[in-house]
Amino acid sequence: MNLLFLHQNMPGQFKHLAPALARDPANKVVFVTRRDGFDMPGVRRVTYQTTRTAQAATHHYVRLYENCVLHGQAVVRACQELAREGFRPDVVVAHPGWGEALFVRDVFPRAAILNYCEFYYHGEGADVGFDPETPADLDAVCRARARNAHLLLSLESCDHGLSPTQWQRDQHPAPLRGKISVIFDGIDTGIVRPDPAARFTLPDGGVLTAADEVVTYVARNLEPYRGFPSFMRAVPAILRARPAARVVIVGGDAVSYGQSAPDGQSWRARMLAEVGPLDPARVHMLPPLRYHDYLSLLRVSTAHVYLTVPFVLSWSCMEALAAGCLLVGSDTPPVREVVEHGRNGLLADFLNPADIAGRVAEALANRAAMAPLRARARETVLSRYDLAHCLPAQMRLVASLA
Image (cartoon, rainbow, N blue to C red):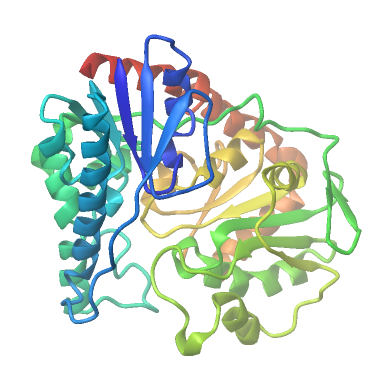
């Protein structure tokens, strides 16, 4: 079977699927991407570059679509070269989010196309306008609708879709949901697992263990979509309620989703200015960690806070559950799909820092009582989101399309 993967940032959500398919000597796997310098065993990487970016004069509703068309054109050129070499994919597995899947049907009309359907935007009822601090005016609502242009075209032209969660699938148009299967990306629970003997070393040389009271918050970037302002507003109350607690905050200062902070500040700087001085002996703000260190941090966590607006569910949420963390999550639809309050974690109001602080303090004050929740958190991943189940399901789906 010839397989073509498309994702601008290789490997993306296909870090397990592509190499697993490549391990079969009967398969030939090619991965078209913008990313250079990253390879996977048995997978041929083909890089592309766009010729330009969207013009500043382009209407701001359409600027994203123009960039997507440019990505799609660049992928067409890469695919034409593959075709000249004699490569004809049986199945194309594509993330359509940057436009790479827009025209692949026109280059390889006989290939089956499997789209990774990560999200579909709405002017209300999801991320847009959820936070009262960033209200959505009509312009934002219209812009959200326009953001779906390339996603809708790609979904219409694909043979089948794949979403990681039911809620993410259900954001897509009702007439097309029937062609989307729900299979999570998969968590390697052999690697992401509890370790009571874990130790996490802070930059100052201090060491945290599971015997300490440790509150953790981790995001790719510290920003409103992942509840960073709400969490920071909760931190002073957590410190007052639990004098022995240590808070470890991990994340960068870029913007992955949503808007930048005003006046060119980072959200980190803005929130530190708002909440005032925090004791550096108790609050540790770290840049993104190496994966091994990140797992060590999860393993020493007494309460791990995961907050998100109604948007894409992070891998870090599942990894925290798999590591046996006591998760304090936002009471928002993506999290509620995975976490049931009082059974395998605790839920708090995303918009209410006092509620978040109260849930964290509850977790810290009742460690023994929370042990069954931690065990059920890991069991949730083992039973529904384990790579050992998800990867074979993904592979069966691909094979069914060939």
